[in-house]
Image (tube, rainbow, N blue to C red; front, side, top):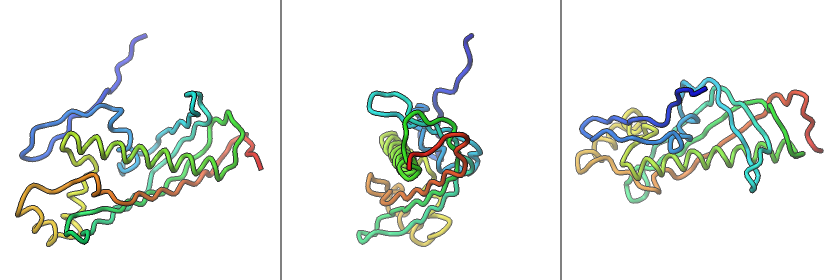
Length: 173
């Protein structure tokens, strides 16, 4: 049966033309959205076969804005997420599974940020973080030109994954 599905979102910002972004471009948004209550993560091998499926709840996010040596805004992200393993198709250690999940989450976040740059959209509301935590710097930056974002603005993404429940799956020692 056909079902309705969301295939993207239109992003609005004051004074700018609304921009459409596909759901594939917005995959990383779920890791920085405080209203995310439950989200799956599928880990695939090089052939596209499913290695593991994890479900995460309530990511804890800290965004730390600062200025670079060139006086441009840069951001550090720290995401802590806990979840459970729901399916394991390939034997692997808990550390390897957590490391692969961390790498995948980082890649999704970076990909969404890059897609936002191409559309000239601040997907993660980083400008608002600068406004709230470093108002004087934000004011100085917005007086001279539109708020500056580059591929180097997102300098560090730290992800801590903790698997709290493995169900009946056994990890390889």
